[in-house]
Image (tube, rainbow, N blue to C red; front, side, top):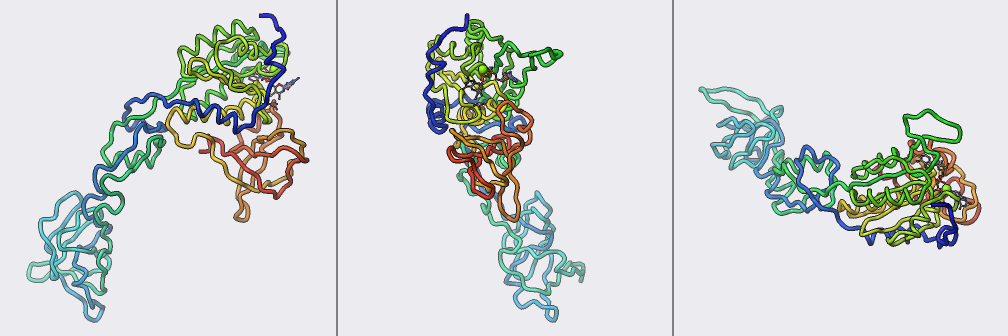
Amino acid sequence: MEPSYQPNRFRRKAVQVEEAQRKIIELVRLGESEVVRLEDAFGRRLACDVHAANDMPHFRRSGMDGFAVQAEATAGASPESPVTLEVIENIPCGSRPAKAVNGKTASRIMTGAMVPDGADAVIMLEMTETFERDGKTFISIKKEILAGQNVAPIGVEVTTGELILEKGAKINAGEAALLAAFGIGELSVFKRPRVAIFSTGSELLDIHSPLEPGKIRNSNTYMLAMLVRDAGGIPQLHESIPDDAELAMRRISAAMAASDFVITTGGVSVGDYDIMADIFDAWDGTMLFNKVTMRPGSPTTAGMWKEKFLFALSGNPGACFVGFELFVRPVLWGMQGKMEVTPPKATAFLGEDFQKVNAYHRFVRGKSYVENGRLLVKQTGPDRSSLMLSIKDSDCLIVIPPGGSGTSAGELVDIIKLGWAE
Ligand SMILES: Nc1nc2c(c(=O)[nH]1)N[C@H]1C(S)=C(S)[C@@H](COP(=O)(O)OP(=O)(O)OC[C@H]3O[C@@H](n4cnc5c(N)ncnc54)[C@H](O)[C@@H]3O)O[C@H]1N2
Ligand code: MOO
Ligand SMILES: [Mg+2]
């Protein structure tokens, strides 16, 4: 297809970032679910709520190695008048006590073992003296102990029926520990969305190719592949597409069928070979927006075709990165049931001046740090859309509002935490 005049390319109505996010989020549908083994569930998101099937602990559990006693029996115990109790049983972990304790007896007990009937406290081994008399074992106690001490009551951590994990929760170490404790070895999680990734541009070389004048290696595809993975998706890497709208249309349509959605990079601006506008003009899908009041990434474009998203991110690496975080990550999170789909926001004090006149909101790659108990943030490198060096060092995007001559050091700014710093 020859480059030609296309109305969409030049006349674009810019939407605010929140508006663009809203347009996307209201179209996101939950993905399908599948059952995986707990050991394979790292990073996956639960497809249903999980309730406790039992109390935790489900028996009165000793918190110390020592002796299970009736606290009342130790009343008045002191070095001058120690209390003596007969030891009637030894209770290792995992066994069931056979005998009840009364005001004159105690049972040797280990950390994690079941507290016997009658006992309401466990006294630490170090606080007792053991001695034998007439073939029997006794302990002497020189200090009072309170009822409940070193005994975890039934259900103190979780009670039966309690909601322990919500649908959409990401399985990490803490979640895995809980699921294992409740005997959940297989769980229903959302399928990982399959995301087709295309870079467009006749200047793009395969990463194995030597450099040639005017050409660069395709880095966006690999950056996006990592971001897709980080957000729980399966990246499907496609060969890059030269600036040929018809070819791009064919390849993108074919990939749509075999994926949950498609991301392209490059060719979204107003250059002669910026083919994505041609595609959005020619296709039978819906365009959601083709310009956003943001820098970098103002020409970011998104559409829907047969209930599948097509994200046309800018080719500039910095803009591509920001476009993913603001618009693509929410879709991946939403499809996997995460409650809050937009990257979390916070505020921080700007660590150095950002003096640039801004027509649009600017999303500056930044790194947050704590100084004198305050959260500060600094940019990780020169803020230019074409630069990629600073991406790896960033943990947030600093939001610089439009107007004026920028923002000064010490001013409070919004920051958006990057998904990969989640
Ligand atoms: N006259 C105007 N020119 C430009 C405007 C404008 O409003 N009017 N907008 C500028 C802004 S802002 C951006 S951002 C870029 C957007 O460019 P495109 O998204 O069309 O991307 P390309 O033109 O294809 O490439 C831009 C740049 O990025 C490099 N690139 C592309 N793909 C990759 C890749 N896979 N890996 C690494 N680098 C890539 C490409 O070689 C270019 O250098 O337009 C401005 N222009
Ligand atoms: O909007 Mo462009 O992404 O600034 O350079
Ligand atoms: Mg361009």
